[in-house]
Length: 328
Image 1 (spheres, rainbow, N blue to C red):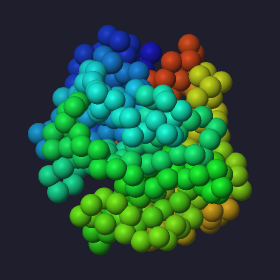
Image 2: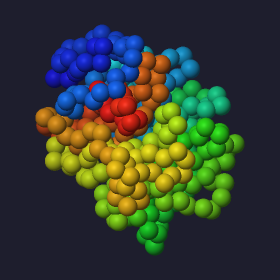
Image 3: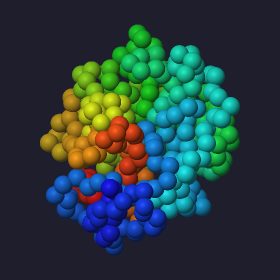
Image 4: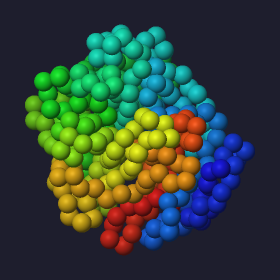
């Protein structure tokens, strides 16, 4: 079972049988969180995904990029029915194998559209290692095989106190470009980028979130109103139905922080306000992204089923009267 969204109310449906397009958001975004976490909205077709990120194309369709061999792609015309769309690099990505131990599996991409091009930041690493790298690829269509590798953006070595995976591009309200990234070790970092190239513009590395070496991953910074919200994942990913991933958030009036939670605790000191956690047969929701669509802001994430499969999760985002997000 899954849930579709009708006037902001979650209604249970069979996800495999649902064929209707996504129901438009009600006229007003709700300001009161539901009493319990909602189930993911109805999605159909090829919905297996891990570490998903989504972009809306100029034509109104959607592209999802997610962890997989040579970075996996999916497409949808309605944000409900998804189909496999191949790999970013169908011929392979040999420049990444120094970091992956020879594996083709590339992690945690971040896809966005700026200045007539799609920009894809993606991670090369192996489990438990911080010998890692973030690369950039660009495309004018977003289609499999159309991507040009633009090279290394940042790497980490075993001597570093950070891990160069889980990238996210933010273009702030002043037009400046920032790349946030990080997993475990000393937490989330941020570097400035040159908008002309998408590569680093200086050597400064800022700290924007951390749990003193504890489990924190997947920074995603999204501006809503006067605040920049840093969405993060706490606890353990990648253990199927035993995963304890949960989605947290903090906010700042600056794209560089300091980000604080609802109680004023700095995310660099372990702060974070919980937005979504496991419930019922939905296990370990996390590695989130946010899409600003025409009908709503959409939280994009993966979760695990009882069988341990990783599926694409979508919910809409509301904000309470104090400006803190919730999902419905």
